Image 1: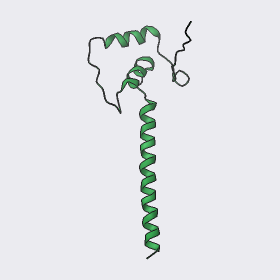
Image 2 (image 1 turned 120 degrees about the vertical axis):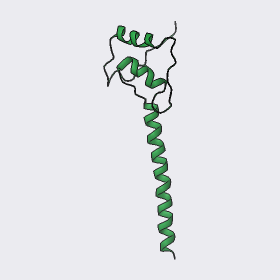
Image 3 (image 1 turned 90 degrees about the vertical axis):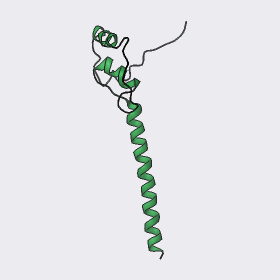
Amino acid sequence: NDTWRVNNKYDRSRTPLPVKEIIRRAEHWIDREVPYDVLTNNCEHFVTELRYGEGVSDQVTNAVIGTTAAVGGILLVGLATAVVKGFSR
């Protein structure tokens, strides 16, 4: 007897569409090419669009935040280094 669980992580913050509507939306894409873009239309966007009517991806949001923080940190270190070098002249 295997243990399993359903992980619909957005159910706490979003209201799922009725099951028949989710199925209707999914069937619409049968035998069609699904447009894909890693930032705006990835697999997580696809399934959340089917379930909630809105494409959402925490993976993309977290990656953008992490990248922005890393670039900001690098710029801050560069600025601090330039300021310290300027004072030491």
